[in-house]
Length: 218
Image 1 (tube, rainbow, N blue to C red):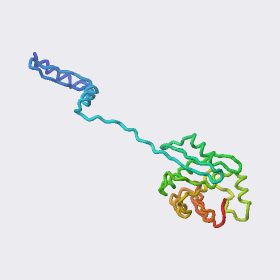
Image 2 (image 1 turned 90 degrees about the vertical axis):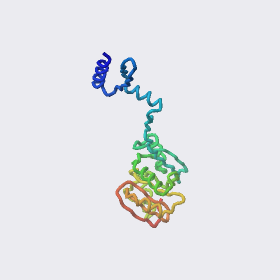
Image 3 (image 1 turned 180 degrees about the vertical axis):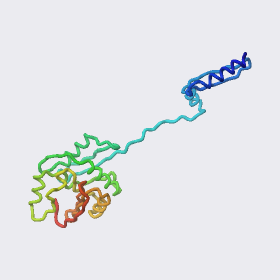
Image 4 (image 1 turned 180 degrees about the horizontal axis):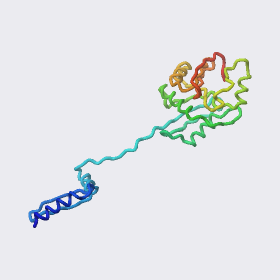
């Protein structure tokens, strides 16, 4: 009778879903089969230290931060503008206001690739937490024309990327203008202008090109 029961139990177990685990014990007086849900068996075994437990760690998304100081307004800004692949709307609004045309106080909507380029430049310079001096950000058409007409040769383009909110003129304290230019050029990400007299570098995310201007820019 006992052997017939054990045979039936073994046959029944083979037809059970794989999520059930079996713990079988043979008693001196007969055979006893105990059926236990697999997840319960796993939890008990882990608690007993028979199998290792694992913790699932969510990957930490990188944060993109910029520290800026505007030479015309005297304002400073330290902002995380992007986390992973997501740009933060409130931070973008802060940057747009910070980089406004300081003559007219008009702001625009910057191409976020410009901020990524600045972030990459600082990382390559070995100054990921360094501050960038802003010489010029966004320009209205009026402001751009004003700069162009100050003298016969100003180095200001008629169709400047500044008017499209795709360009920023920068300095980085402790970094020579030449080294800053070479670093910006290494990305092949847009236009790079070298202004050794005024000691700043123009970086934009427009067409790839480069130039030098020996006079005084803004």
